[in-house]
Length: 358
Image 1 (spheres, rainbow, N blue to C red):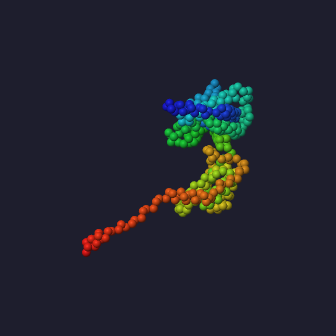
Image 2: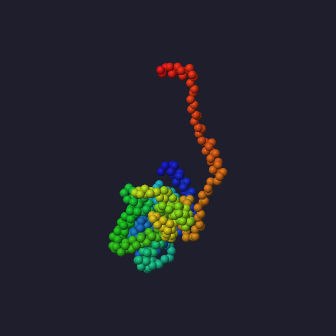
Image 3: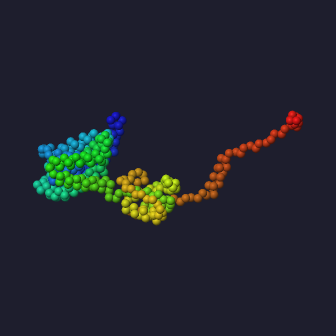
């Protein structure tokens, strides 16, 4: 990393927000509760480096606790990914992992919790522990992402090495977790616990999606219609915001049409379809999910009643404007070319020319 990049990274520390650190404090504690109160008591394994730490904790001497493995495995890879992920992300992530590790230590070794019956909340019911362990730890991971960090170094490792191996980040993480669960099955001499661990992993992924993206996902509708003006006006009034338009043409028919693009929430989707097909039954509509909207024209996806949008009136030109434009055109018009006149020929010259022709 050169000096200019280092200075830029240091300047980026000004964007650190105390509220984000508060959120990371909560998310790390929540993640520790999900792992220590539900998963570890029944020998279930989380995903990523967190799951690797849990496996190592269960097969090594007890003086090597979970906190030790969490710090040893995660923090070096966050620091290794500093150049790619940025200093702000690294600071947030290291803080989240530190909170997660300390909270796990306090829950396991300081707080007076009875571990003799397995989970202090769900007992020895492995399915309940898998479901709620995945749910709680997934909420913690999702909150960490919302606050600008990450609580597991496996994905950072995937970003660093997946491309070199010809894999996507998602494929790298999936392969890592599959290998982890196979190793845990061999260590515990049972496939039951790894399968329950996969259940916890699936629930955790859904919880992360819910926290990061929310229940009310945004959708984008693309409408291609020959009655674009009427459709755009109706949708704009219905949704309460503008519509993006651009000209299109069919490949085979070469027919000119206009494409309309708008963003709404999923509860408004049915109304969009009905409105479009009431105006133009032949309109072509596609709908895609989007995870977020940013920018100056970011819309509110709430279900509040939208204010009626009135398009700006088109003003007809007044007589004064027309007269002024005509005068301007007259002044700027080019001057007419001069008329060509025939020069008279003197009589003596005309007679000499006549004799010469004879």
